[in-house]
Image (cartoon, rainbow, N blue to C red; front, side):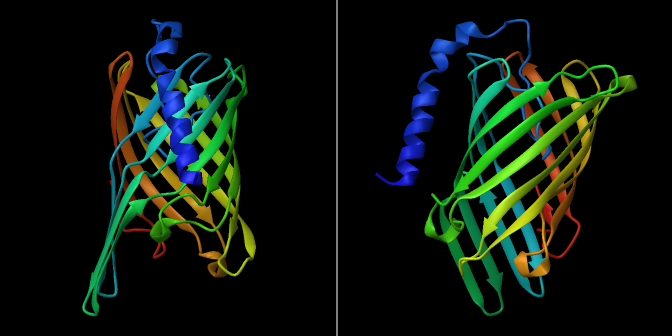
Length: 258
């Protein structure tokens, strides 16, 4: 059995738990998600809860006559094992890539790599300190050949959230990821995001964000960064819809993402 099949089996097993855990949810709480912004929440879903967050993403880029378009179906499965710890399975799902230039056309489609992880809610916010969470993930080379990364890439992130006056909130997420290169070398690169959110109502939120999923030297792929705006709407206690628009801030980042 391949790694991809193992992970798919884990996903199905966790999804099968959903009817069993639904009764354990606290009915007086609205859903709280880790999307659509890049900065992760410091909170976990809670003991006995299973939560699926999924969507459709589109990236476009133009560079020296080359036009690129990538679509993915990012999905995150969160399983609460206690009131402070959750298990996570994350993937960009089905991925399609196309590139067009005067020299020809390139097409690729398949499955993205998966990531297994855990989040620990360290503490709630208090007088003078933020709510804190720690995320430990491992990206696994489980995807289709066209989209497969190099080996296992572990990462560590810390999420800190402050509640501000007048319905504002601030989130900061620094981190590190160890990435491998095809020649067998490796590099430890940075991760950083900062987001300012505003609650318009109890169920509607908007935000602006600066996200840097990779901070690296040029020989290690260079830094990627975006400026993001977006919002979310909790339409029912267990349902949320959201959207994000991202603009690349350097030549190594796609021009536009939605």
